[in-house]
Amino acid sequence: MTMFLDVPVTGFTGNKLDRADELRRDPAAIIGLRGRSDARWLVLDKLNPVVRPGGVGGETPAILWAYRSDVPHDALTIFLGMDGDSPRFAAAAPADELVADFGGKVLDARAAGALLPAHEAAIVAQARSIIDWHQRHGFCAVCGGPTVLAKAGYARQCTACKAEHFPRVDPVVIMLAVRQDHALIGRQPRFPKGFLSALAGFVEPGESLEEAVRRELWEEAGITCGRVQYLASQPWPFPSSLMIAAFAESETFEVRLDQDELEEVRWVTKDEVRAALAGSGDFLAPPPMAIAHTLLKAWIESGD
Ligand SMILES: [Zn+2]
Image (cartoon, rainbow, N blue to C red; front, side, top):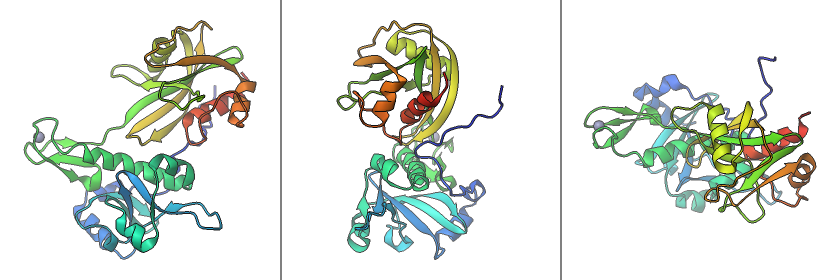
């Protein structure tokens, strides 16, 4: 048995910022960093990043790093970390000025995951999940009192009972059940026509990841599974999931569909998946930024 697995690189990962946790606890240090001439802001307008569009030469878009003077002083702001020696923040604010003065463009956050350089998409994921959390947690879950941003964005504190609240991450298992030379994929009713992907579901309190994988496959497809093997994980900032990808050994080919969750499930071969990933199959496969793509790719490349 090998102790260390080669984990594939997934979309929304590769953030190069030093999150500098020690600075978050020091309000004076954060104020100092905000005042620095090399401090820059990622602006999210309705949770979508403001970017510099790709130029006529076809360059890829990139985050438009704004100056402090271009961000409303009362905008909700979080500390992202340090880019080398330079502080980086994110703020929730309308993009109007950045669009008018700097040629910025508001990019849909999902599209950002595919179009931005990987390390910048990862920064957008960090910023989007935390800002979304702040916007939905204005009141204390203990006493109902108003809460205020704390720890440079990594907590909220109740102004009445002083309880501290922390940003949440919601674990989701996403898995390929495999049996002999087939894997199970399916489509949710909300998926685009012809699109099939790995099955997925939220981990519930009081279960392990392996148990969540087996339970979801049983609930959605009626199959029982034995061994479960972890592959990789991925932050998914819609709003704050952590996708955990795994393979599961199915004990049967016989499926029983949960029609509330899925419209169709299908056992596919590696050749069918290869064709779909190449864009020439008889179903649409998930794009490279999605960890379901990583799962399918790892499966067709595996010896099993
Ligand atoms: Zn409270």
